[in-house]
Picture 1 (cartoon, rainbow, N blue to C red):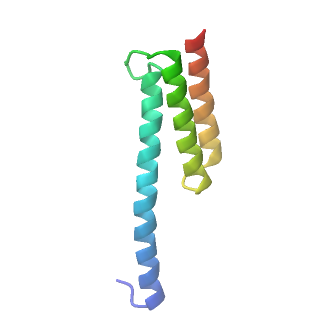
Picture 2 (picture 1 turned 90 degrees about the horizontal axis):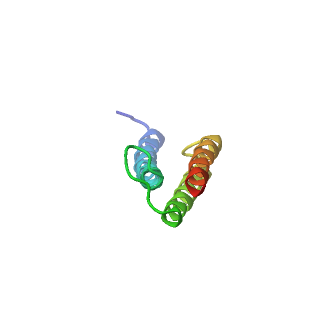
Picture 3 (picture 1 turned 60 degrees about the vertical axis):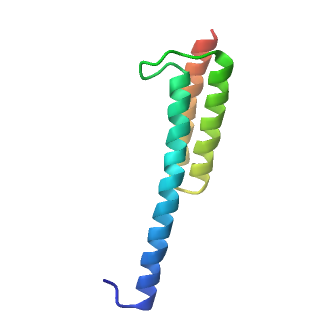
Length: 93
């Protein structure tokens, strides 16, 4: 256990940030999972193009929000969004 006042404060901050970051990551993963399911991935039937488009836009927004806070890297978000949009375009055609 930490003995210094500053170390104790750092531990409290880390615990608080960890909880916040965990919630943000869980929320982001849920949006991504919903978008992937809407696109027919993971052995689920694809929904209509409009519903899939709404799900992909929501997932992109959630991922960008998490990347903006520095929890995940922006290139990871760009790669993931690119793959989702490519699958969305495949459904459109």
